[in-house]
Length: 628
Image 1 (cartoon, one colour):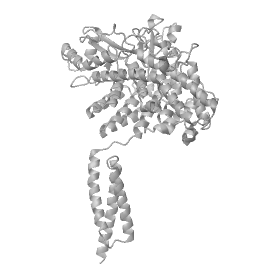
Image 2 (cartoon, helix red, strand yellow):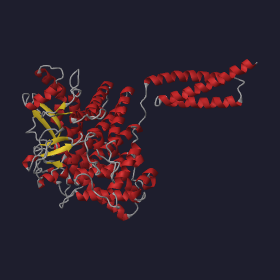
Image 3 (cartoon, one colour):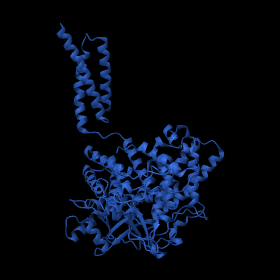
Image 4 (cartoon, one colour):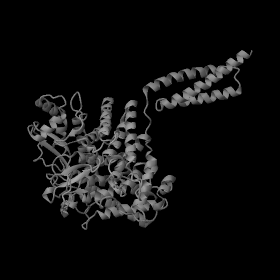
């Protein structure tokens, strides 16, 4: 299936408005009861493409593209559409702000009280009130992305506002969003954790077995691991101070193995965070600065990838260009940037450890708590691609990553058919169950279901293709991306108001079962497909890949064509028609020479066309000479 991100995004917007804005009023609906994560995902389905892709912008009414206007006509005309967006943003912020004015980040209906096994006959236990309000890294990260998108939208839209009441409303909304953004950033800071373990512990043995791809003696692998991670250990010890309890995280002992990343929420040993209220534009310190955490103080791969994505938006060029952060947020962003960099380098080092087979190539990945899944391999691949994007990637790195993605696509039934009673289907539906360690202290044990294997594969495949400088590797990645998009297209809802949204897996994942088609949208999956389509649009917006061989060949053809052109220009008896044709040929060759390094294929085609026209003139000369 051909990737056409603009058209596919417009199709999703058309389905989104039919579902979420049926009676000229935004409805927070979907498959799950409204919660801070799901509602952010629903709003980002509209706001994320509109703020990431200038051709789909909604913040300049007089410059809104005609196809965008037509797609969103149910929201109103170009003047009305931005005001509807403002209404929806304001409604979201109000819904997830408590009576004390504190932002809320609870997982709510996304939380589960039973794992992968069958549901008890008497039903799953009820969530406690405290558990429903638990701040989740998903909510912190999604709020960072949403707040930045909203602030960017308001910043641009405000430039075209003339009404005093609307200007005042925009200013108040910016303040409310800024407060939520600050709290979300603090939540991410306090959810970052480092786990250190004795070499003979189960955690250390699991880590060593994952990286030991050659069967080398354990003490040799341990020593090499210490050597490769020495620089990261030093930076974690010296540069990561905010929110980390130095008494419980021993990075001074070089004998300990460690891992870093994000827990599912604020870690139980997280220290309070101080903030300058004047710089933050706040009257009181946010409650999240001091509230107790209960999450296991160990990295969760899923939460780590989610956090890295949110921080990536914080560090984007657009955030800096629009000046979306105040002084306090700039300081928080710098602290998060350090964690973002070190975490990527850590997992990239672990994924590529050794001199022969990468641990990442040994699918499935095994985590430090002993769990194994192809999904974990995909998560580590996601961090690797992000790290390679942040620095210079080698052809070898990307070529090996291509093989990993292709292997995961096969095992995940993206490029292979589903078998009867296929266990790999569980990775998609109901998804991989993540035990939220620590929640049992305030109620029943809680779980988080992650079911974004296909859109995550699509997004990271496209990001890797954008990085690749190898034509063969990029073609393999693009073919895989198209196949993954075809898989996702077959999972679109096909009946009811949500037609065109996701997710109805009955056809592609359950061909042997009689399942009732889904009609309610999953904003969780739909938002992640949109992220992947935005990644596709960014890749296509860049210059095409340039082949060195084509550049060399085109230069050779240009030399021949220009020489033949000069010979023709020496002719004294050329007719006016021939001279006109020679002028056209010269223009083609000038154009070819100008674009040969950036668009060698185009230059090649222009040069070949010029050579054909020169040959036609030469044939004319031959015919004329024979006639005498």
